[in-house]
Image 1 (cartoon, one colour):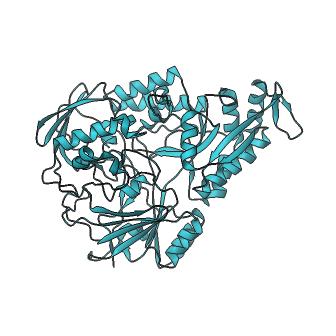
Image 2 (image 1 turned 180 degrees about the vertical axis):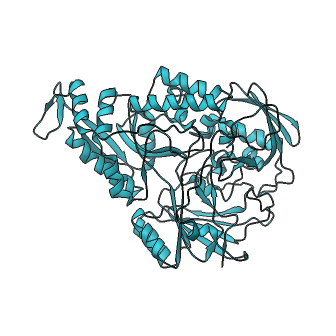
Image 3 (image 1 turned 60 degrees about the vertical axis):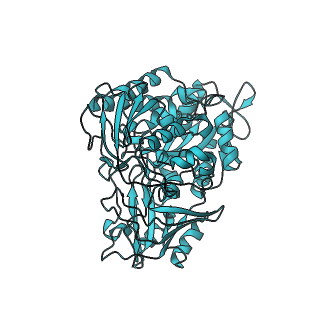
Length: 540
């Protein structure tokens, strides 16, 4: 979560500020008072977006960070101001050319299986991230410039990149690049999915799929990043997967759970009014929640059709109806809390212009249903919906209605998460919805570089299948520069280009909405993602 430096010892170097935006911070569950007490098990209610694998290097859901962070530590830690700080790395140096990173590692750290944290362990993790056998859709992309590394001594590793990468330190603070036991990686790497072994404040317990994951305290933990090195106050932690919004909220009211993540937006004001509950929110950096458009085939292979549907959808109306005022409409392709976010003119709602663009694209006729027709074919697009998140479904339904007014037919297909992922990778879809949270503007390279279109050799994350030479050059320039101002300017041009290319409809900047009983204190945040963490949590 840093950016880069010269051959000087780095303590904090980041391009921009990530601000933790706390709503009603006086009532926030993280701000509990009194002397912390040890003991007890805290129960967190999560939505139904359950990971399929607990290997942090194999991103599977947006909840992977919340589920994995209790188990795993990262090389660096990002605080609320966006500053990168030591964690499993005690210090680091970066060469003037940005190609060599020398990490000095914290001593005395042990993984849950007793194996030692050292330079060899870091090297094994970096190799695991990029190993094709890991099938990492995220970690491999984040460390794509990684070339090799050399063990200098037990606690010093020299890492070499094939090209400068301005986001390298930033991403090493994310839970997706957290450190797995070297013993597990050497002896049984496939077991990480079902029984992960890390060095974090909690030890993995049991995973009852479709229901819950349990954790127990790591009594020897002494390397916390928040300024407190001791073990967790809690004896245990349980994360329950409660897909229905009402079920999750009612479980909090009934005291069946102590905390809920993904608080239903419709319930936020009720939580704030309840003296027995506390509420807080933190902005997530990265790419806004969006409707992705497949530019690799008709109808959205035509830029004018993409621009038209973007203008036809009343984003403000959709967000108002779904979020009850808890979400802000996105102004572009990065959230405001992301480094190098550019203030722009936003994206308009203009049905008249949308109609003109469709006419220009040749979709001038309409059938009896009001759907536009060209060469005897209806202007039809297929949207994939997993049904995991009720708000996602509502958004697709409302987008469907808005598109129909413009003469665009959207057919929503309900599929499993696995089918959705496979079809998206193959380009067998026209629309899908999602969000990509990360602490760097390099998310634009992840999502829209032509290098990240899935092939038979590599699974990339450019689900829109956008390929634009001008955009690719901007991304490479931004990744390579060591000048913060220059990088920000380049990313500004890239964001403007994306608004014109319209590979997606940016809908809203989604914060983490967390509610808790007032007896819960010390909830903290992984600011590289905007996710709640529990090392300092205690219950009165």
